[in-house]
Length: 302
Image (cartoon, rainbow, N blue to C red; front, top):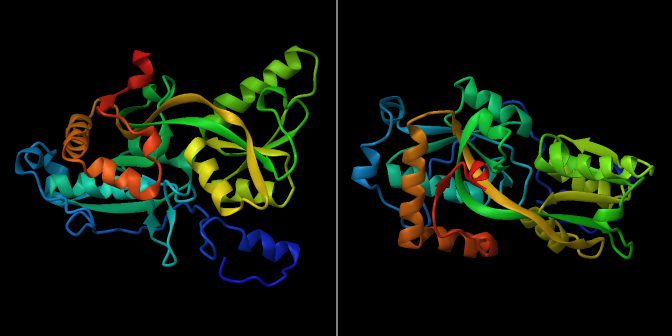
């Protein structure tokens, strides 16, 4: 936090955003090209052989257009200038650099990204997508990380994710926690004759976290690196509720059947092999979920 003033409740909600004074609300548009496909802090250089495999449309454009929900720190969020940062961004930039192109990000609501890929607006979706068989019906995923689900509660308040019937739980709209995990827990409650979980959906993860910090909900559910990061930033206000569960692969979303899928997979594998991938994850403190092999559509193979 940049200021320690005592603020009214409305101001506190704004001040407690995970990235400090940055507005991380996800809009429907707003482009923020990083340009780091040609200039990066990890020393990645163009691989001519890989670059030749790019679809001609992308090669001619000289860039990868990427949809991103920049509210999911530390994976992807905004800096003080409103540009996307985070380890997902660093990884996407490194992939682009390996292919000799730049990155052009468009900040979007999470649940708008996949439709924009299938509609041809974005080449990729880089936004901590959990690879699920249901999502694989719409897009292909290049798998690059393993993450679980981790709940958080207010400091000093015990919440059991497996016994949350009747509680208010914050989630980001369109995430796995919103579409699969919490609804399944709520159904188990009602099947047992207990009150359903009251799910409060927010457009951005920062808003869901703020709701917990302010005591508007009993708990929040998010991917493990996001919850761990939120706790590290608000450790005097929130705490882990239970342990990580439902570990699943993250995937970079690509249009179904696109030739670009294998190109991204091979570029990622090159970054894994040369150590850049490990450097990126270690810099951001998320190396526990590292993989040693790039894969495609891992969810359908489990």
